[in-house]
Image (cartoon, rainbow, N blue to C red; front, side, top):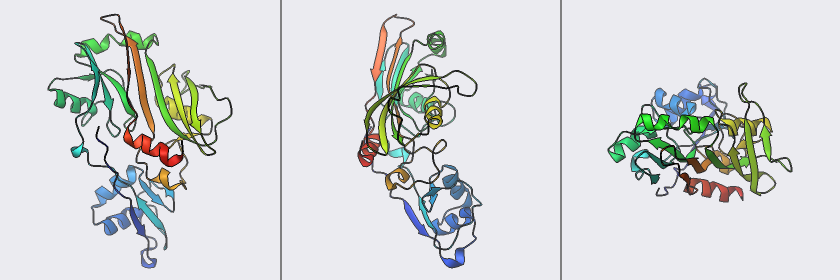
Length: 280
């Protein structure tokens, strides 16, 4: 996908007479937008007050507060979603960040529109996670992959930019996720004093497994909105509109041809830029 520069953040300084205004009201006034649009920005967790991520619309601002509002590029200008591999049964796409796996307005709908054929998501990636995603041309073909996933024969390798000082020798995170056993293998690819570039191999596939496991050991993804710190001092971290996690490898035994499929998605431009900014 063609790289596009991110929009510069909108910077707002709260004047004395504006003290006590709800954040939603201040944004609507200063940005000349509707309250609904201001609420959407706040709900997306891209609004910072004095370097702290704030997602309460009724948060009362103080005189002198420094507010940053970060946005994303316009989806309409994006190139067609890359297809990394396909056959008569399945296709693997390089899912861009910012798209749900399925449902209204999803990557499933987008690829169906772009290929002119209905496609069905075989598994899910978080909205903000980029990389390899398996789709099926027919729903019945996708169902053939269910036992393959259940037997843990699907290889899923991710790469992420991690904030925090990892414990030396961190190689396995074996902690339950929402009451179910969960196992993640960890490999540190590069690190400095504050940030790391890590590879994660999922042995199980629980919801938000990598993000929850990192949180459990005192770490979080760069750009994390739900499992990370609310105060974000490093300026590069505040400009990241999404968590930096990329599904770089997907492999599985094909249920129809019995051949092994293994596909790798290149690191996207925003991830490479973020890694550079963080020095990893």
